[in-house]
Length: 179
Image (cartoon, rainbow, N blue to C red):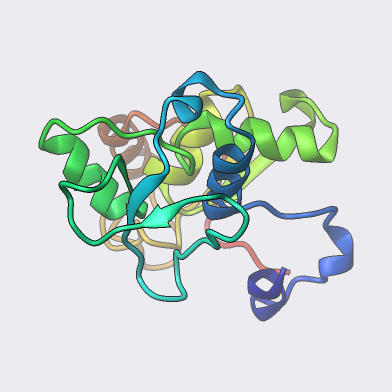
């Protein structure tokens, strides 16, 4: 909620939040998913310090430093993507995987048709919303503004081309989102 507050949102309008780190922690704790149940207890935990780190408290994990001693590696998305590109197996817990969206809907007690994802990343936000059938609003003035040649508003052809390139299709397109 602190991140939302720092962006100027009234946090009383939100039921709750969930991050990929919190979701990973829950799955490591419960281990009711077969993939998590099969994991061992020795892991290498790679983080960016406070950003991206999840608490390992209460998980019964032993953090090791030698890859030969590790039964799995717990890492953030950027590193996981590189590991996967080299042939490693990755369990995705954050955007664009639909698990983060379905978990958020479950927490809020709503269905996909009652939600909208507002985001500026076609790969993470919009593609992620497409999988579980959530409506989405693509903010063109965000991270893709340079690709769109954005001055004030992006043209329809540029938006369609960029969406096609990313395989992400928003329900709505907005130049900005302010609260």
